Image (cartoon, rainbow, N blue to C red):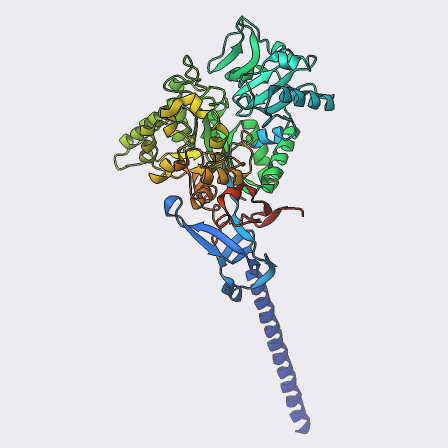
Length: 585
């Protein structure tokens, strides 16, 4: 019996040991699972900050909120709130911003990525105040780049020169005659060539103006070297083709530039099929550092096939293709904007149509019927009215086909790009038709030295009319039209709020009754811009679930003097939680 008793005691001890071992293993496993769950919940926190974001619906009903804590996980916003939020979070990393101001990433609703990249490596003629200075800059650039077969540049503006006259090929021939020179005007609607470039393009006295373009001629009918709108293509088509590596280089230069300025998203206005493929490859390889709403150029020969392929958005929301840029007219500075009545300073000229009026309806129907957004370029009052008439006809067709409709189905968010010179009686039609005016505030301050000369005192009432649009309830999508204007969005915010240039002139502002408030200006570069680009489901505000696209800036735009808005500098830029730019001390 003692032996049997010892056996049972030993057996019970072993069982207890196993039980305790199993219990201990269970506790350890439970703790491991708990730690794993905590890790899964752990967030990166930015705190002790001065944060602003809009929330709710875009437009006039958007609500501005402040916050002191921003929580991010896997590139998305988890929560924003006050310092008490820190007690509710499982924190992995925390960053004390020491009171710095945080804003949603800024969105440029109308820019040109590849043109900007190219411009950054060409001769820059922006803001030069005489023809002599422009020619000297070209000569110096050509001397420093002896390896280039073509001398390319951009940015000249004869309205800044004392005589305000177009330049001549002879000006360039005096310094460069052995290599072709091609210089695009600041608005990209005119070009200035030397004689060598004209020769290669086959342009001479007998060359006929192309539809939608003009060859400027002297008193004897000889080409002066200045080509307007579609006439520019005659030189551009004989220039050396750009290969894919050059496209990527230009794109990367542009991306780095805009990230430095706090731009995290761009509506890229006019991209051809080849360029779209480059952007697709970058997005799919996680090599696209910003978000692009790419607008297919309506001049792209394969447009029917591209829209028939359907809407596109990359898995990481870095690239979206669901809009088409339709080219209406030229620009005001080169007198290519199409006007209902002749120019006030050129009584025989009403401007140019790049896309003939009779073709607009077919393009609109093609784009709309495939579910794409229409983005129609309209500077002059003629093209703005033409666009509204065609949008109205398109909406009438849609309602006739479905009598239950009272407005657009499938929420296309069609836009007029620029909406620059609009007849006052046409402005309410934007709201009635649900058309978004996509406008660029710095156009007003750049054009104020010549706009009224072009259109006169009556038509100027409907020009750059931001307040009129906002007061009727329209949503404005703001941008810069870079590289036509400088890309810095704070220049645009400053122009919108003050109607002044960066020297704060004129003192009272140019037609100051059309100013925006600071709330409206920043809204137009964030939540409203995201909505206008069909990206508001994931960007435009710092709200839970949206991508953590945000910037840290050195001044609070809501509290500083409006005259200093253009001086704001971006310290850090984040796209999808990635630290994409850091300003060096």
